[in-house]
Length: 89
Image (cartoon, rainbow, N blue to C red; front, top):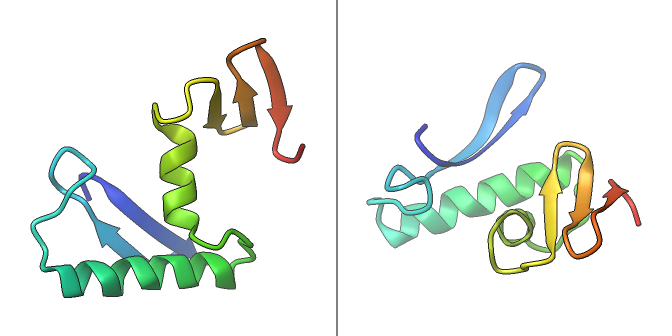
């Protein structure tokens, strides 16, 4: 897709939001973005995610906005002291 987010269940894409500009922005009209992001968040909730805004949470935890905490495939990693926190803490 070139960026954005997709939710796949049982091998099929059930929701997606495209962000083709630098992987973080889109040329789509705002109304489409609202619909797509809502669909992705809804699909993530349907899959068991309990975060109130999953896309925003994932973007925040993987970006540079929190300089001492990162999310990676194994869970959370606290850069400040080098501790891998796992998926729950």
